[in-house]
Length: 336
Ligand code: AMP
Ligand code: MG
Image 1 (tube, rainbow, N blue to C red):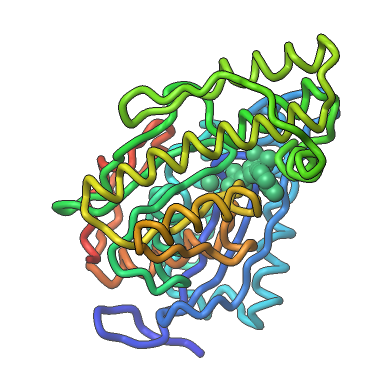
Image 2 (cartoon, rainbow, N blue to C red; image 1 turned 180 degrees about the vertical axis):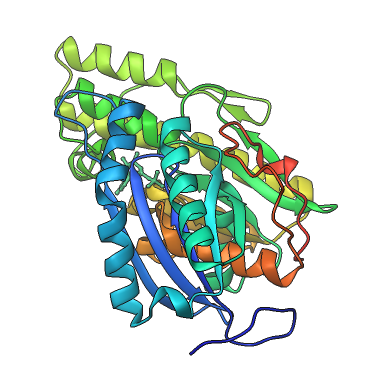
């Protein structure tokens, strides 16, 4: 199983560590994109609470060794068989990112492996491309921490639209708290929405950007003043997902693309998929989703981006550090 790393070598094996937010994950991927292991452990806040970054970081510290052990066992490998270690460098919650980086750095030193810092959002795009076989898509990345509409142009993944305040996943979880639902709110809201009727709520798209916080406030207000929970959930979904579909459609037209990849935890929502599918069909564009276990935060996507970066000749930065506010378009894409 042991092999050398270099451009053109086959069978490079990369271990990826994800720790930007609630999930601590370790994935192991080979150079051909075969996922050998993908193990995760996610922090769940107490009912009615949001996530305190310090508590999440403590969770990650507690589970990291166990998650690594399980990943190696699942892949039937030892640390010796790993050629490259990659960690999620940003964007994300600083205390959580630090746990991932320190763990990756210690492993890299102890086992004498090269270390790569990878951008979390780009990892979502690349794992989506790997599994969809889309060539040059518009990626709609919708998660607990991010909401972005991205496409490759002139050496970088450019952001063609994004949220101006909270992410769609965070909006669903916040509304879930207001409706007294368990965390995460997204799946429970989806279930309740199936029996709901439409009520009007604010639809906020400004240019190519979106805003969800006013929508959460208004939906919560309606619930408190007696509107049925099912109606609030249905209408929230219809409006938020229509906003995202509108901006994705305009991005497709603007960059003249005909493929869409939906990824991130919110991609699990079937109503959202349906809306995007309809829009794509009407535009004669192809619509792709990522397998669910690779849509949310996970270590395998970080490992896969590590493979791409290493093959493109990535050199470890001298003073490698976390990049909590790193923007997707700051990263030079050297592997395309
Ligand atoms: P991530 O940060 O990519 O791991 O995604 C987590 C987010 O996905 C959370 O905000 C969840 O509420 C959301 N989510 C998970 N499943 C669903 C679903 N079926 N519908 C809507 N949102 C969901
Ligand atoms: Mg994510």
